Image (cartoon, rainbow, N blue to C red; front, side):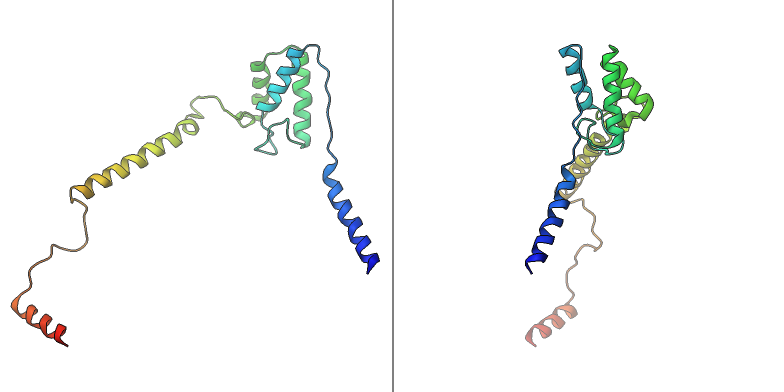
Length: 159
């Protein structure tokens, strides 16, 4: 029994330690401004594989390549706009967390706003109709009971 516990402990240790093998990349920069530019760009560019992580946080091989490429471009003295344009040309608008506003992304930017306005307008319209008594129902207007119906009703209530 003790041997089984030891084997289980070793298996558990090996399983947990597999996730700890992170690679730490270090890059040298000529100035602090270049380092700041690098940090800004790696935080604002999205990893094409991970989809919701920036290239700074991602351990995917493509993110490592992108960090290396950003370092190269920053070291060459290119501006943020030039580097972002290079990445967009290579990977598309998806590489940016905040895509540019143009004809292809207008629905992305204004779609939620338009849906919200349409929803509010529908709720206001329904509220007005219900206040005015204009909400349509399937049943007709109630009518008064005839004498025969009244007598049948009295008989049913007595029983």
